[in-house]
Image (cartoon, rainbow, N blue to C red):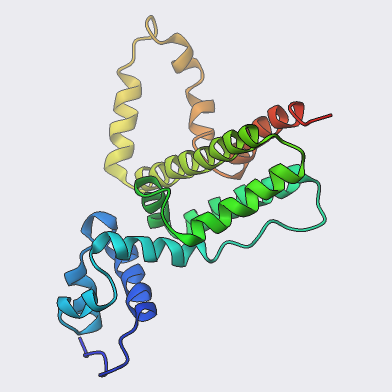
Length: 216
């Protein structure tokens, strides 16, 4: 691996390289030593910019969250909320490591706060009281994070022939006496493990409940 030219190492270069390593190796296989090796520098060179791996994790998450567009102007508040949630899901599907970073360190980072500011300001402008706006933000964030993490995991399993064989064997082992409804709905359950239609279905349910709470 060629060494990074002297005086060209920077926080931005480290973060972009770390993201490449994380996306290639996964968060579990990520290390500062691996990032340093990719850059062609010693691991200690990274400590000039980041105190530890958690600092670098936060910087990667901030870099990715910085790609989130603001809520669109000129739309009714439910459409603004829908846009933010869909954009976050798209970003996590493009960069699956973001789901892990948000799940493990959800409250850190200026860019995460910027996205929260945008969504909370939409809710407050719609007339929701402070506590309702805060609870709504948390509910929407955890829905998007949970649904997308599930979707990413299911996509990985469905691309693994061994995992599919284990799933089929598990389903075939279920007793029709003990699990009649699960067996009956198995095809429907398989069709609703992810995808745009399923995500939008859940989001529409949440927005219908929120609309019912809209201040008169």
